[in-house]
Length: 359
Image (cartoon, rainbow, N blue to C red):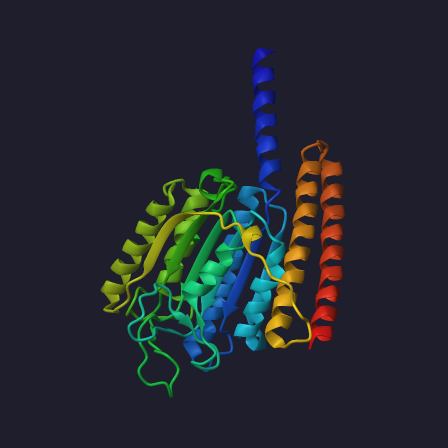
């Protein structure tokens, strides 16, 4: 009888741990140049798309997270404007969630730049976006965990008449993923939410002044990232983010040296204090005074909308603490999705009307 009580207590503890984990969402921003004129970038981007989705599915299942939001910025949406809209508007609603940013395409550095991330090249050098700047903008969303996965070159491009470096690796990558079975094992230590802090994992295929050798299956670096994640959720050998970074870096260097390729990855793990966006204020605006004030008005409206939806998300979290029955929980999740979707739709209409009236 005592043993049965202990088992019941353990099951209840595990159940409520899963309930707590499910309150977070996963947001996956995929900027993949799958229409690139460069064949290996185009094919590699498609392989990376598949690989990322597979690992996110594994992460969702292991952590017990109910919702994953994908933002596919490929094809005609592979541009700075589409990325700005996702970061400024669509991600304005998240709070303490997991954000995964994936970029695959051309990258380059400005001469004398001290930044770690490359610039993201879209249709030209003038429309490029600074990777470090984007990283800060994502940190401002106050996620619990931010994973940046960048597969691009990171060296200075002197000839601005050509797209940045196009190194190619036509040999087989020799993936090791198929040998390890997928299992459902949560790793709440690595992916846990620590209020007031954001855990940041930066995975860049090329360190400063290095190139990236992309192949049809995503390349050596990407295959090592996938293998490390699969080890995290299956084999329990990799249990810390610094250990994961060291493993990915060492394996990539070893395999690229064997192939005679000059590729050095960058991986780092940092913990940041959460950025309090409530301290950002906007002064009174004359909506007829020009495009700058129009943008300020749009930012102010999005700030107010973000607060409304965060209040809704907090209320939903509080409600879920009192739901015990599995069937009632499913119904509650479905109802909450409808409420969030309706509020987002109303907010988008209000935002569009404000922008149109401001022009």
